[in-house]
Structures are given as C-alpha cells and as structure tokens.
Image (cartoon, rainbow, N blue to C red; front, side):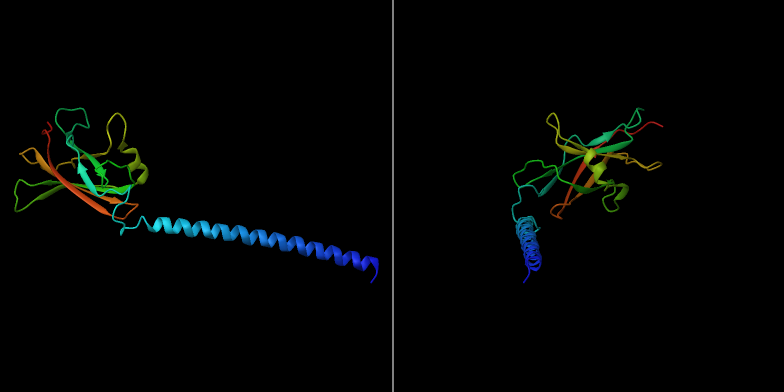
Length: 187
C-alpha cells in the first residue's frame, strides 16, 4: 500500500469517526429531549379531569355581591347588568384561569314562564384577559351585559343572572346564579 493510499484511508477513517461521534451526539440529544418530553407528558396527565385536587383548577364559580345594574351611557337609570365572576379553587381562593364565559339574564317575574332578556358570550381570550381585575383587593372578571334594545324589563327591577364558566385548563364547566337588582332607565 502506498503512502498516498494509506493517507487517504486514514483521512477517510478520521472522517468516519467524526461522523460517528456527531451521530452519537445527535442521538444522545434526541434521547434527552424524548426523556424530557415524557416527563412533561406525565406531569400534564396529572392535570386531567380525573385529578381530585388541583392547585390551580377552579371548582366553584361565584357571582360577587357587587354585581347588578350598571349605567353605561351616563343617562339616569341602568342600561345593563355588570357581573363580577370569581372562579374559586378547592381552598376557596379566587384563581385567575383562562376560560370562556356565558351570562344569561332572565326575568323570573312569572315563575312558570321565565323570559330570557339577553345572552352574552365571552370567548375571545384576549378580551377575557382584559376583563380580569386583580388589583387593590379585587379579584374577578368584570362582564358588562347591556340590555338589548327594546327589551321589556321586569317591573320588579330584579333579574336572575345565570353564569357559566368553562375552564380551559381542566375542561370543567362551572355554573352560578344570583338575583340582582337594577334601576329602570328613563327614555
């Protein structure tokens, strides 16, 4: 074997060794990534709907006592209902979690024939996020629900607020309802 052939074989062998080392590093990195993803998967499985006590998941929905009639146009009388929703965890603490909300205003003056005054859906997560207030001792979603035009409001000046909250992390749907008052707008 000539010196040139021997040099070429050594060079090829060196290139093969470097390639082998590069492939071994790539395999080791991928094995580490797979192990990390498997660990994350196991962690996320613990947040499923079967988990009995989750640190972050709300288990109860509350309509805060300040909910009620609201003046949105600056004229005398209320022209809607502002609902303050508080998702609460298993310890009773208010939690800020992403969710979709629906509010229904119902006239229960005639118990046998309740009348829906309006349905308000809050699905845009950017808007939902802007509706969260968590400063100066307040922790709630503020949901403005203006009365639809030409709706006949109950003379009792009371409406039943039914709220639904779909927690996007756990998939749980929570509900709450509360009767609130309002003042009749002047026309």
